[in-house]
Every structure is written in C-alpha cells, then in structure tokens.
Length: 255
Image (cartoon, rainbow, N blue to C red; front, side, top):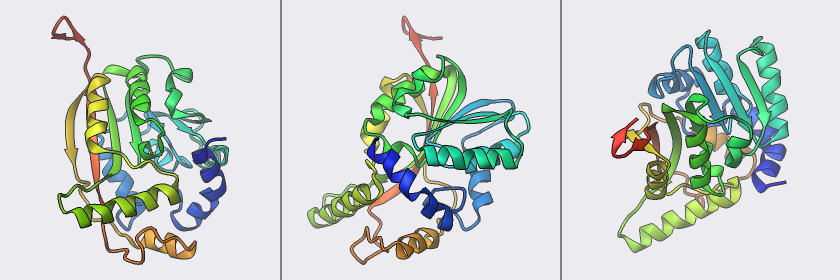
C-alpha cells in the first residue's frame, strides 16, 4: 500500500466532516461557486469525455455531470475508501451511466484506458500527490486525444533571493509535504514535463476567486495540524491553474 493510499484510506472520513464532498483547500466559501468556476475555467463542455485523475470522493465529477447532461466522466483514485464514497454519491444522483469511478494509480493511466481516449484530463489539487509528476503527465498525454487538453489546479512554492524568507518557505512546504503526504510541485519542472509530453501552454493564471481559508483552518484546528509553525497567515506558495493542449509534431508540422 502506498503512503498516499494509506493516508486517504485513514483520513477521508475526517475530510468529509469538514470539507464535505470536495477535498480542495483553495476555494471560495460556497462549494458550488468553486465547481462552477472550474467548469468555466477548464472549459468543460457538454458532450465531452473527461478523466478526473485523483478524484477524491467524486464530488466534482458528480457536480459536473449534473450540470452537463451529456458529459461522460471517468474518475480514478488510489483509495478504496474514496471509491466506495464516490459510488455512494454517483448512486444518489443516478449517474451510473455517465460517471464511473475506479481504484487505480494515476502513474499508470495507460493500464486502465486506451490511447487518445479523452477530450480533457483534470487534476484538481491532485497532481501534488504524485511520486513522479512527469510520469503522470506522460500518461495523461497518452490517454488524451490529439488536440485535447490537460488542466491542473495546484500550488507552487514561492521563490525569493531573500535567504531567510526562502528558508521559511522551504520549512513550511516541507511540513505540508510531510503532514499531507504531498510532493509539492515545482512550477518550472511541471511546465517542462508538460512541454516534453507534447503539450502547448494555453494559460497559467491565478484562480479567479478569493480563497476562504476558514475551511482549511477549521480542518487543521480540529485535527491538531500545524503546518505553519503557529503563523497560519504566512503563505509559502501560490495557487495556479495551468491548461495545456496536446499537439503532436510531424516533420515540423502540427498534426
């Protein structure tokens, strides 16, 4: 059992107590506002076939499918507990024909899905759990169609030439990684991995809403978590959305 699998098998019930069906830390106060924003920003359109990689308990997948009646979604999580919770939510809304969840390691997407299969692959605060983010991105490139897209929402450590401040950033990010079984992404390495996998950048931007940090604070207070050394106002990273399009090259020409 991987560390991430063990973590979510043990902690999913606690997330559900505080976060509800959507386990995302950077969010506005209203969950529906977050998910409707994601629909628009990621440009998820009705009739698409998408993959939610690292899907949690299928809160976003169910919401998207309810909003778009012809959307089809495959969802993958490494946690069996999350699979069972996701199935409950799919059952509740009668979405069995359009939303499917399975247990799987997103480092090996090609073991579960054929090549050129999806219009869009999304990672909603999920890619940072990867042991090898480049491998995950390469797998996503194989299962997404040529001309299709990848969308990533995650946080990336700040960079500074102030030695003291950089030490503080590294300390807090290290705490986050240890406590949340995370592997906080490096922005430069992520962009390089996307380009090498055959993606061209569509945008990199900050989410278009202000985050309500009370949910995260409530979660950490409830379960005795201190990632920031008693100074929760310190922000060691910035949240970003990245969207790319898969373009393959043939003798210098776009296919």
